[in-house]
Image (cartoon, rainbow, N blue to C red; front, side):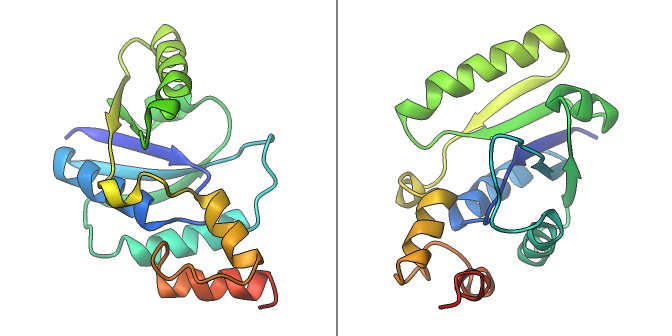
Amino acid sequence: MVTAIYPGSFDPITYGHLDIIERAASLFDRVIVAIADNSAKKPLFTVEERKKQIKELVKPYKKVAVDHFSGLLVEYAEKKKAKAVIRGLRAVSDFEYELQMALMNRRLKQDIITVFLMPNEKYTYLNSTIVREITRLGGDVSNFVSPVVAEQLRKKYNI
C-alpha cells in the first residue's frame, strides 16, 4: 500500500486543495491530508476547526485521512510510512520554492519522493489568503470554497 502525505495549512481548505486531493487519491492507495504547524503564519482557523472542515469535505474519498503534525515533514512522512509528499503547483512562481523544498526533503530523507500535481486550470489563481481577504472585505467566495467553509469564514469576520 502506497501512502502519500498532502501537507499544508489549509486555512481554509479551498476547491483547489480538494482538486489536488482528488487527483492524489486517484494515484495513491492512501492520502493523508496533514495540517502543518507553521510558526511563520497566524491562522484564522484553529487546527481542530480545519480538521473538521477537511474531514467533512473528504468524506467521499475513502482513501483520504486527515491529521495534524509539527516538525519536519519528512520525519512525519517516515513515521506514517509514506512514500510520497504531494505538492500542488498553481503557477511557475510556485515552482522555485517548491523545488527547493523538494530538494531539501530529498537530502534529509532520500526514500521519500515529492510529487507535484497541478490543479484544474480554474483553480490556478486560488489560494487561502485570497479567499480570506475577499471574505474580510465582504465579497462572495462561493466559487472558491464549500458552502460550509464560506459560512465559517463569514462568522470569523462577523459578516
